[in-house]
Amino acid sequence: MIELSVENLHLDYGSNPVLKGVSMELRRGEVVSLLGPSGSGKTTLLRAVAGLEAAKKGRITINERIVFDDATHSEVAAEFRDLGLVFQSYALWPHKTVYENVAYPLKLRKVAGAELRERVQKVLDQLGLGHLGARHPHELSGGQQQRVAIGRALVYNPPVLLLDEPLSNLDAKLREEARAFLRELIMRLGLSALMVTHDQAEAMAISDRILLLNNGKIEQQGTPQEMYGSPTTLFCAEFMGSNNRLPGRVTEVQDGRARIQGRGWSLWGKAGAGLEAGRDAVAIIRVEQVRLADSATDNSLEMPLVTSMYLGDRWEYVFRAADENPAQALALRAYGLNSRAPGNHHLMLPDDQVWVFPSL
Image 1 (cartoon, rainbow, N blue to C red):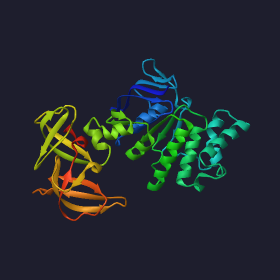
Image 2: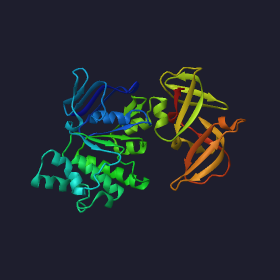
Image 3: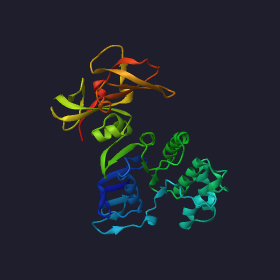
Image 4: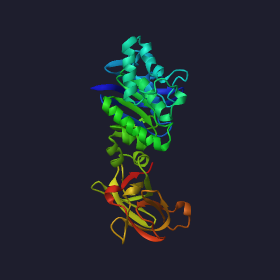
């Protein structure tokens, strides 16, 4: 069942178009992340679904109820869309206790007495906050405050949970723990969630599908595996993952493969749409796909090692080709398990892990 449907949505800020015909669906029990750079429209899309931004054109349907349709000039106010919304700042009332913060949406809906107490306590227990109901937000850790905000959004069983950068206020270690908790919670409760994030690792860890936005449009969408392993555009290939970028010119295209050539190197890779021989292009390969070889092989380059960096679970190597203009010299990164001595090394770039796209 489709819990949320957005059709051809347009939204402007004054004379500046922010959303340019976005369409998407969220199915029951699914987590979809809106991913993209600053200014791509992801937060604006979430706010438009919530009713906090006024769309110009299109249609939004929540749980089979149309809440915005420019064709019929109909729009349901934000407070009547019955959506659970978790803000980036959590927006907890500092003068209210944890219990009172979570109970507030039920009080607005005139739920009282034993039912209110039972529903609030159930949510607090599910979030591991059952013993903290009497505390105020300033007495909680960042992770606990985040859970209170989630509890307030869940307590009235909304059809869709909207999450606006829900983990961005947490430190790096706590974010890893919180994203695992959030994914497990969403799965256990069978929630449907739409989440905005700029963190691709967070999006891949939590989501069933990712929508990558670029300049107000959906650039590509798919499962985390599809987005990471099968990018269809240069923008998607570069945005996802940690990458090496090799600009050059296409010398040959055949059978879905392309040969790209630069100064002193030539490689085969998967051909992106629109590639033609003689056209400027960019080859992309994930850093973890570059292999160090003992000797020259097909699709390999020989480059000097500039430096090695210890990352704890692995080493990162930086190679840079000799060039009269260092700023234009080709640079590649790779991972390995051991420290490497300076000097020339053979780098193998498997042709099934290299993508070649037309230059933007």
